[in-house]
Image (cartoon, rainbow, N blue to C red):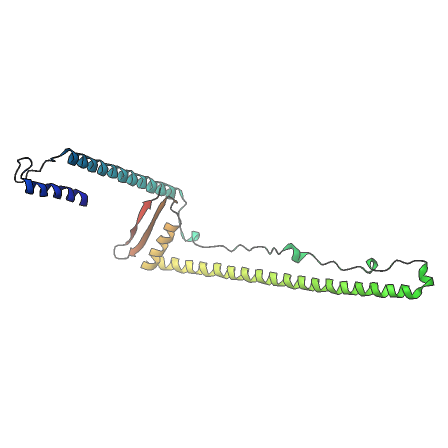
Length: 237
C-alpha cells in the first residue's frame, strides 16, 4: 500500500505542476497519463493478485491440516484419567557379561616341573625348580584372586545402582499416580486450574502432526461452565 500511495502521490504532484491531465475535476479519479505508468500499475495489480492467491492456498492447506487433526482425534479412544496413570514395569538386571564371568584360578599341575630320571641324581636342582614353580603359582593365584574380588565388588555395585534406579522409578510412578488421583478429585470439584490442566493434558494426548505448529492456552470459567481455548495454529511447508 505504501508503494501504491507513493505512486498516486507522484501523479498528483505532476498534475499540480503541469495542469489537469485529463480535464477531470472534483472527485473524478485521475487517469494514468503514460504507458510506463500503466505498465507499473498492471504489474502492481498482478503482484497483489499473486500474493492473494498464495495466501488463499496457504489458508486452504491450513484448513485441510486442521481437518485431518480433528479426524485423527475422533478415531482415538476416549480420554479419561486412567490414561493419565502410569504402571511400573520392572527392568531386569542385565550386567556387563564381564562382570558375570568367574575368574578362573590357576592349577598347580600347570606349574609343577615334570619329573625325570635326573631328579635322583640332582635332588637339589629338583627342589630349586619346585620352589620357583611354586612362587610363580602363588603369585598368579594371588593376582587371580584379586581380580575375582574386584569383579564381585563391581557386580555388587552394579546391582546396587540398578536397584536404586528401579526404586526411584517406582517411587516416581507412585507419586505421579497419587497426583492424578488428586487431580481427578479436584476436577470433580470443578476447580478451575484442575479442569484447565485436565483438558490441556487431553489436548497433549493427541499430538499435532509435524507439518502443523501452534500453541493453545486452555482456561476454565466456572461461572460460564465451560472451557475457553486461545491460541494459534499454522502450517509449515
